[in-house]
Amino acid sequence: MIEFADIQQAAQRLQGQVLETPCVESKTLSQLTGAQVFLKFENLQYTASFKERGACNMLTQLALVHPPVRGVVAMSAGNHAQGVAYHAQRLGMRAVIVMPVFTPGIKIERTRGFGAEVVLHGQSLDEARQHAHHLAERDGLTFVHPYDDAAIVAGQGTVGLEMLQAVPDLEHLVISVGGGGLIAGIATAAKAMQPGIRITGVQTQRFPAMVNAMTGSQHATDALNSIAEGIAVGTPGRIPQDVARLRVDDWLLVDEGDIEQAIVMLLEIEKTLVEGAGAAGLAALLRHPERFRGQKVGLVLCGGNIDPLLLASIIERGMVRAGRLARLRVSTRDVPGSLARIAATVADAGANVNEVHHQRAFTLLAAQNVEIELVLQTRGPEHIQQVLQHLRTNGFDSELC
Image (cartoon, rainbow, N blue to C red; front, side, top):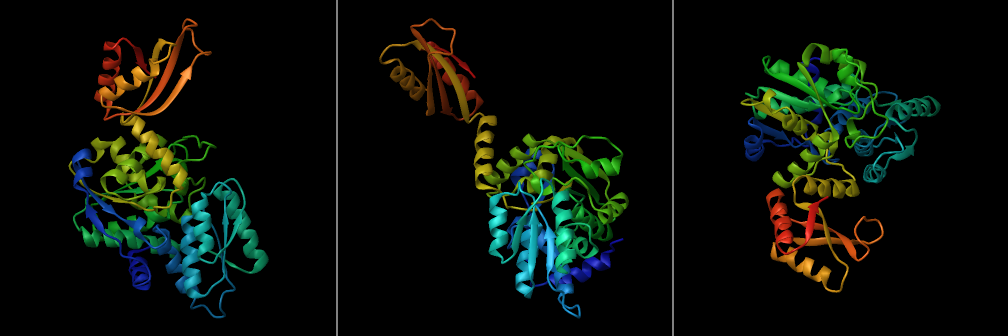
């Protein structure tokens, strides 16, 4: 079992080696959720994730072993990989990282950039782990588990220690959960420093393995990849499970749409970039506001390594949900000048045309008519209705697709 003394010792080892990230209140998110929300910006770490805390703690101890270790091997979807690679490079150790084949390219390239040897293997973290153990045995390397190791958990626990030092009267911590190393470490530190504090773990509906293990529920695991691939873990760690049973108070599930919304809100409101796992805590507040209303709540923005193409898609989908991108269908006579008149009408209503598509064949309209699909930039749902009304007033049949 991990104890608070282990986390205090880890904090001493990490001093000067990892960033003590800010933990500050978000006034806007507090207004929106009804809770007083404090954000711990772990996405500002050098490797953009809390994972380097555990890696630094373990590798620093390995560096003192005699005879010296021949090198380390780890399995990771990316953030643990970068943490291990960076601190192995800093300490002069060989590092081999096994990653599932679905790992975002940005995480692969950054890991290689820290001098690690990257091996892509398997469709899941479990398959990658099996291969990493094989390489450890074959090459005499020391396996560095991403979450089921006492030194790793103690290192991650320094996040909670810093949060309670910065805001001693926090009442509730909401932590994203994959294998469980982060929540186990934070819960240990937080309960020691503030025994009455509540700890809530958050997982995605597609990968609820820890929730199933802790609550006895039978939520199915979706074979599809999650937007929060950093916490898409099929088997939580034994050590984190033991800690969680004693020190975690509640568990919540969020869906992919909740996480997308949280990513966009953090980008727009806090001007900070997080990956799916890093947004899970805020997603829980948005999905279940009644559980946190009126409380001082701490969230950990645990990682910021997100694929740029995925981010672009999330932003665009977020604009659709917010009514700032809309797709309209307009029916009109297929004669010269019709499109120009429609475009002018849309402009008069204050909207901007992003895309135009003429549909002549796949329609039930008369042969001399045409359906035109418009993708518009708008100011929101009310503005969309104003655009539709303006089109109808000017003689164009129109509807929201």
